[in-house]
Image 1 (tube, rainbow, N blue to C red):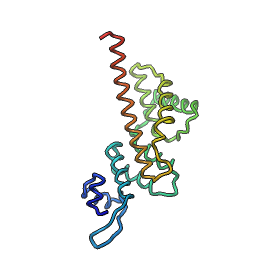
Image 2: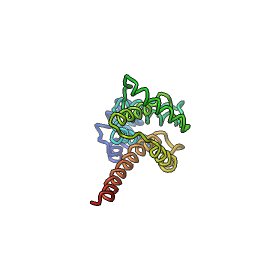
Image 3: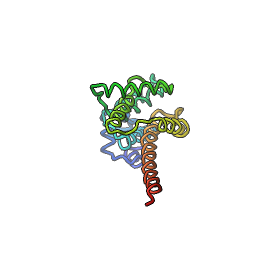
Image 4: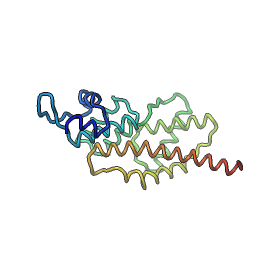
Length: 206
């Protein structure tokens, strides 16, 4: 397909596609003339992945390039490619000085060990959860993670991972992982807020 058709099918404007080509985020098409190239389904799939990372994952161009580099490195197992995308989705969290942080981070590490979860020592989610625990304690919010642990485990194991095509193209796997992680997260958060409204009305009788 020509670039105009690629744009129409992907929903990405031609100038944006040309930008992705210049930046190396999208591989070059097959040159058929001095000013013409042909594109195929691999380009369409890559554009879908970039859009998922950019629009749903809210990643920076620099972070997207890191994910794409992992996707294109055939020596990396799929798990590591997905891990790169997962880590890119996590907000940057700086460890805080003091005992509060050390205690919260120790709680996170102990919880992961107790659950037997395979989470890397440098996973940004460890610090992200530790920071949340610090804030909960500072605000006097009870830190009882057990119900959330079980809910997260079941959602991931029984629902979300089944949406990722592990045996398919790596771009498609990353796209599915990003969409699932972010969108299922939003669904869960929205349903919790609905449940809060409903349960509050029941308990308060209004």
